[in-house]
Image (cartoon, rainbow, N blue to C red; front, side, top):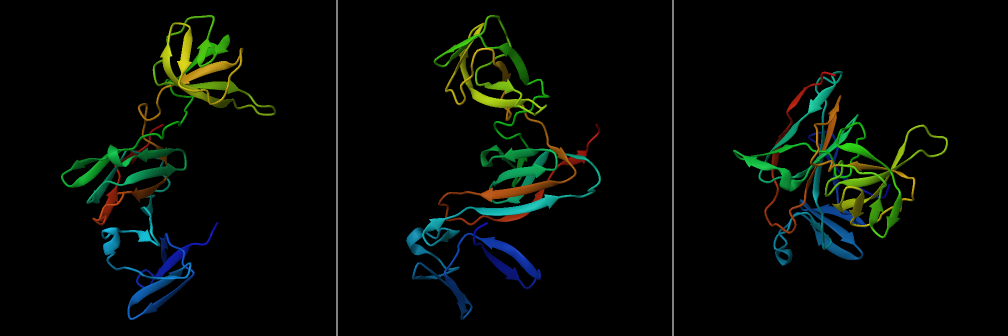
Length: 254
């Protein structure tokens, strides 16, 4: 871990804020914070007319704002986390982690409802769940030429945009390993063409197909959920305001 800048809050009686800038030196004079970086002197928490009053800009570099919190009410109950609701002046990107799975809500996934921003938790892109019906086996590959895979039998489990994987079992391991090949662009009854070959399969490799994990989403489960919010407004002069964050949660019934 590299050097980080943290600040102490007398009110909270703890170190509760991480900052994006790492100064060579800092000093507080007349209620103002000054820092040095590469020999240059900077005054913090002041209007920057040259950069159009941009927030979170340090030493000429703009950074996103991040806030991390945890939902852990009734910690001994397994729960289903369905949504995130932000009482804010704009949407944030939400990355979610439970003790069992992960989820994501991109900024443009949120919908504004009565002044709040509401979004359903989705699976991250590329999250492969082999227990779901959205993942289906095709069979052993017969041959491959350029970007086209050919099989000696017909199938109907493939769709445009699906991801293809090689299934293998590494030595001294019992669990199968899935290696990404590429995304389907076109297909026939016994051939599949992908957009690019990330990992080259060979004949007799067993191939499976998986639908988009974002489209085939389900709510994450777990005993707790850690939420990381990231505000990336670009070069917006308007500051971000976040008043509260909530989630629609119910007890999981296996």
